[in-house]
Image (cartoon, rainbow, N blue to C red):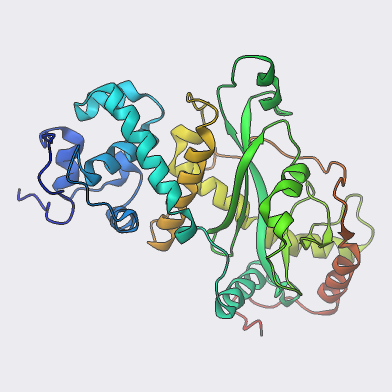
Length: 354
């Protein structure tokens, strides 16, 4: 079979690539790349173009990117990857760290807020469609937190990473659009910290640059209902008083659950990263998580979708917690939206929400 290598093969290298390695043989013979690398060939092409690398030394950009993706796909064993690719374990370690940094460096090209009024309009219309109600036509995103398992650091600080489900983790806070594409991510805090505290220290909250006036972000009960500095609309707390709040919560849940599905899709793609404890230094974990979020968005844009698997669920269900944020409550705004939901009938999913 003729090898299709024109696009991916690098220029002459100091290191010799062994194309008889089975994983590379499948790649250069145009076989499906998802079993080995968890990305389709179209997603791989977009990633390589964004990285824009033209190395004339080492193993070359293509091989190093494949090593990095294979490491993400199979887990965190540098030894296994070194055997698969026939290269030293120390080389695999250097490649994984270098390519991770390069992927993180392009995050603002891939993970970004809506850049135009038209983009924002598409997002808000999309959320109204998810909610199946025009009262949500000003929703501009959905926010939630995701716990990523880690091997905790030794010493007195290790207990800080132990969350309420009694495993060690680092928190990813993310906002997504109506398609499940991440538009903002923040990774920094250990698992013992509540979602509301992570929110309070995030750039999204502190800078208050998004969403624009009149728009809001959908959140679950683990967050406070706010109008300022970051407008967050949460569901009514139980017990619910009357039919209106219950109806509002139902529509709210339909739209907000897109962020949970986004997490599940990312976890399905990188099962070995998200469903077992990451055996790397805890300071490297935020870069890995950010890189996975970048790859998730690239795949969404390329139409490379992996349906979430039924056994993948959120590791931690946040309780409602205390409202520790010094801010203006969004409860009156939520009451207005709830009244609008009660006043207006549901509309079909393909309704023009103008």
